[in-house]
Length: 232
Figure 1 (cartoon, helix red, strand yellow):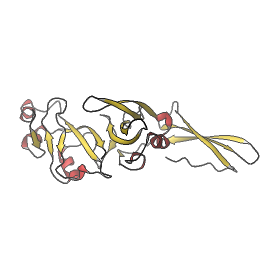
Figure 2: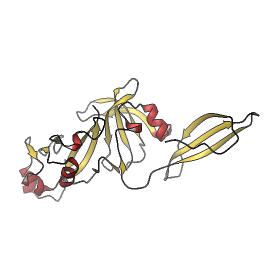
Figure 3: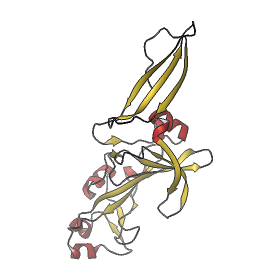
Figure 4: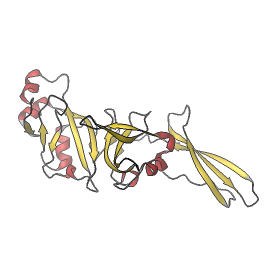
């Protein structure tokens, strides 16, 4: 996210510092533009970096999240104060160095694990929260199986429910969600409603792989509970 330079008779832009914005829920932070002119006079201009408020945020494997991006690139777009380094938990329970973007905003927060943890470069996986406002190719938290099929362009396969991997999409069957751009793939784990009948849940439990148009899947009506993006 670029900050527009204020109108002034300035010869040199000395620097940009980003800090947390206190008490403003509609801002990602405050940019400080430091300038001096030909006569050595020095000035600072404070510019608010607005937080997006419209609809689900569309995630793409491009721009700050391109396959060749780095933690520095992401911080340049969102502000260093909004990027926290730490160990990211992978689906298998292992931990690896990564970053958490916007950790204080559950609707916009996401985690990035790296292929090159030492350089914090080249994303391996981006994971979203269970209350995320982000969407990927129109898919977001709460999307139905029918909506997933439409976005994918065809039915897909789902791992049976129960256990840590229950409800995970096992295979997009060559559909559109297997490559959402730049070779990235959408990962999804479906969740069953607490009001789903026990008989419907029992029909799709266990280690078996089910087609998304299976009558048992349709009867249980699971929805997207969590999703992530993996990089090639």
